Amino acid sequence: MTNEIIHTLSTEWFTKNDIYQLERQEIFKKQWIYAADESEFKNIGDYINLEIAGYPFVILKKSETDFFAFHNFCLHRAAPLLTEKKGNIKQSSLTCRYHGWSYNLSGELIATPMLDINTVKQNCSAKLHEITIGKLDKLIFVNLNAENQTSFANFIAPVKKEFETANYDMNQYNVFGQMEKIANCNWKTWLDGYQECYHCSTIHPSFNRDFYLKKYKIENKENFSVHSCERKHSSETGDQQGLWLWHYPNLGLPCYENAFYTLQVNPLSVNQTKLTYKFRFKNKVTEDERVEFIKFVEKITIEDIYICELVQKNLEVGIYQKGILNPEKENGVAYFHSLVKTAVMNAKDFAYGDKTI
Image 1 (spheres, rainbow, N blue to C red):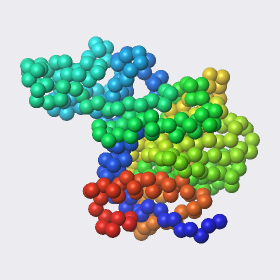
Image 2: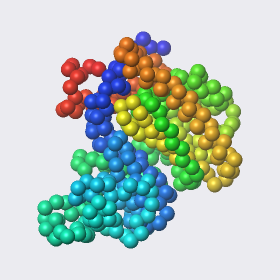
Image 3: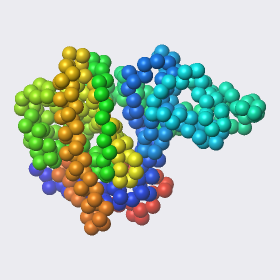
Image 4: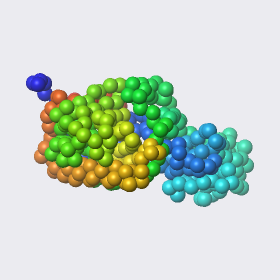
């Protein structure tokens, strides 16, 4: 037991729109973000229309082995090029429905109706604003920052090492289903709960049934945290001890022996967050077992949404200012807060006086 005092972020971080806008620019626009799974693209020309922290973009399969990602606007007058959530570009070209400007599957401008295309290319970009892609096995990550990117290899190397150490082969698992939930809270309010299990015995009684929660531990590493807990007995979650990863800023990777899932925590506004779960299972897992596992995760999620929304309401009242973290049980929250503060408080537009909030 330690007497060290660690404070939470102050209320402004969870309620002020100007801080949220800085988080969009300084975190979500600059970090590598998990976006999709390679298996979601079956045919050449398949695309998925996505949005992360208010940044709309598209990932499409341009060949059997290559993908292309771009910001979803036409170079002409910023109309969205694709509005359907997913689909296939049948003619191997992409045409804006507003004025008919067209692009090939590499994003190159190929037609500008009633305008000389060479003149256009001399006066604006000749290609859609490309987004860099990186892959961890079948997981597709994107980086929206056109400049000063951390290489994906350097970004993902510590996580790959973690999977190798655990002898966890992600290629043994195939996508089975997806679940989306909306939580009326700040994205950090949600992730604060993910980054600790101090609340598990009171909010998640099913965890208390399966795991020795007093032995739950979190090890903070290089921009990610490793959660683990000794299991009491087997259940719908499996036989082995739990291994849950979190990667800054918004990816959860809970791993079990028969299944793992990605949890993308996507801020929609300062006080609303979309949670997207994609579940993957080994082929030997039966359909009934898959359904039961997803129901288990959904139950946990609903319990978390309930308490996080209540927390958010109290944060917005304006009485509570900041709290104190348990240095042993909430070290993951403290680490998460430190990464957010480092990213945002160094921004030139950060305008909170002594920068101590």
